[in-house]
Image (cartoon, rainbow, N blue to C red; front, side):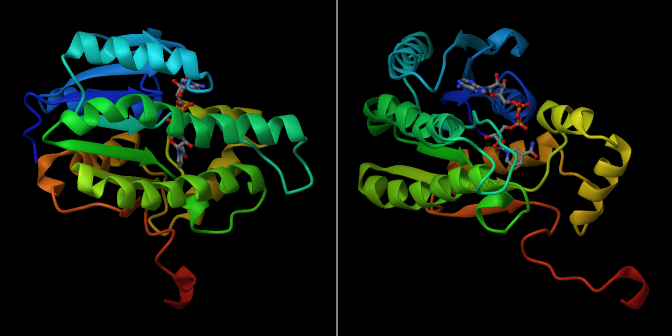
Length: 252
Ligand code: NAD
């Protein structure tokens, strides 16, 4: 599982949170890694930091081309860049729906489209999409975000079918709430951040948030040759949030 030596990876949104932990872990296990990010300044060496906006096709094509040229090809693509949205179905105006779907869904489409010619030439090609518990469980106040991640889940399955005969595996990881700068920003904006954090911890059966490194480890597995027979899979890293139904602690 640790053998990524000789493999070349691109991670979108790799300068913060889950993407940064993933980029570091892939590099620690022997891959050469390019980070494509709106603000790549958070990606330290040996990561190759490239500025790119997954919401812009020209930007994505130029960055993927540069990454492939400087790394000597591509084997692994991690579509991790994403943005959030808060609200019920009647809360977000149309431009926000377009923006979030554009980044979270079309961002994945654009990067994959640009990387496909390189991936087809790889003997160990793998795409890992960053999905979410929001794709598989109904969470309050997340209508737009959940719709975007539901699309990422379905897109993962469709891409896995389309490219299995190209030798490209496509899977996704579904994190529960993870302790990243994104969640810190949400907590900072809450009226009662400590109460909000306690509520998020309590929502996960393990009683704590997932770490970025735990999500990265799942990406590492799916991207590695150890997962050579795994495609079309959604791997939950969610502290039991999707699969478990516990009784309250006092009555267990
Ligand atoms: P984060 O905000 O810490 O990092 C996101 C990174 O993506 C940032 O570096 C940002 O600059 C970059 N980015 C945003 N828009 C971009 C764009 N248009 N083009 C290029 N880069 C862009 O967030 P995170 O918590 O690490 O989340 C990463 C992914 O994990 C997202 O897809 C998110 O939906 C998913 N996820 C997060 C959680 C969580 O609880 N944190 C849970 C489930 C899924």
